[in-house]
Length: 355
Ligand code: SIN
Image 1 (cartoon, helix red, strand yellow):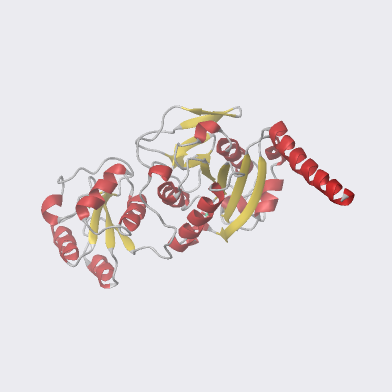
Image 2 (cartoon, rainbow, N blue to C red; image 1 turned 180 degrees about the horizontal axis):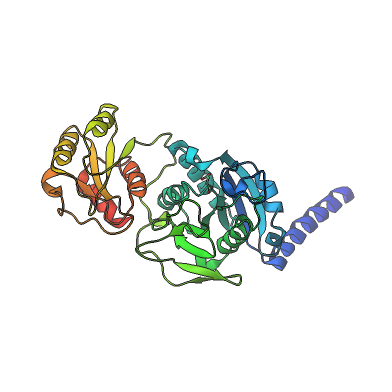
C-alpha cells in the first residue's frame, strides 16, 4: 500500500511539474513538417546558388541549424516528404492536408510550419488554404538559396515562420506564406522570379504584413473563404479529378486541347491571353470540349488582374466558368476541389467568386 501511495505521488509530481513548466515558459508548441526543396538543399560551393541539389537535409538538421528557435517556441519536426517540389503531386497534397488536420486537432499543437520548395509552394499553400479545418496558424516557408550558400535565406525564413505560426495574430488568417520578412496570403501569392530571393509577390493586393524585428505586423486580411469556413473536405479522398492547364498564344491550334479531352480530363483551365481571351477557332474547340462534359475555366497568362464574365467569350452561352483573379495554377486547384462536389457550372462559378 505504501509503495502504491509513493507511485501515485510520483505520477502526480511528474504530471504537475510538466504542466507548470508548460505554463512557466509560455511558449507555443509548433510542429515543423518538412517536404524538401531548396531550404533543405546543398551545393558543392558556398557561392553556388543554381544547379545545387534540393531536398538533401532532414528536418532535425534543419531545426538544429536555427538554435534561436528554442527561444520562441517548443518545436518538433516530422519529415512528411523529401522532394524537389516540382515533383509534388495531388496525392502529396492530400497526404499533407490529412497530416496537418490530424495535428491541428490535437490540443498540444498550437501551429504548423511547412518547409517547402518554392517552385510549387503557392499550389500546396492554396490547396491547404481550402482543405485545412482549423483556425490555428499554418505557415509555409522555403528558400531561394541552398543551406550551404553564403547568406542562405532559409534559416531566417524558418525562424520567422515559427514566430508567425506561434503568434495569436496569425490565427484565422488562412494559410500564410512567409519568406523574406513578408507575410502573404496563400490565395494571392505567386513565385514571380526564377532565382531572386524576393521572388514571392502578390501582384493585385500586396503583402498581408511583415515581420519587423521579431514582431508580426498585419495590415490587412483576405476577404475570401478559407480553412475552417471552407466547404471542401478531403478526409476520405485518395485522388482528385484530373484538370489540365493549357497556355494560350498567338496561332494556338487545338491539338493539345483535343489530346487533353481524349485523355479523359474532367476540366481544363485556359491560361488565356489578356482578359482570358481565346481565338475564334479555340473558342470553337473549347465549346466542343464543354459539349463533351469537360468543365472549362477561363484564366489569364498575364500574372494579374480579374477575368470578367462574358467579356472576351460568351460565358453564359458557352457554359464556361471564369477564374476571377486566381492565376491558372490556383484556378486548377479550386476546379479540382470543386469537381469533388459538383459538375454544375453555376455552382462552380459561385465557388470561384467565394474562394
Ligand atoms: C523546389 O521547389 O523544390 C526547388 C526550388 C526551390 O525550393 O526554390
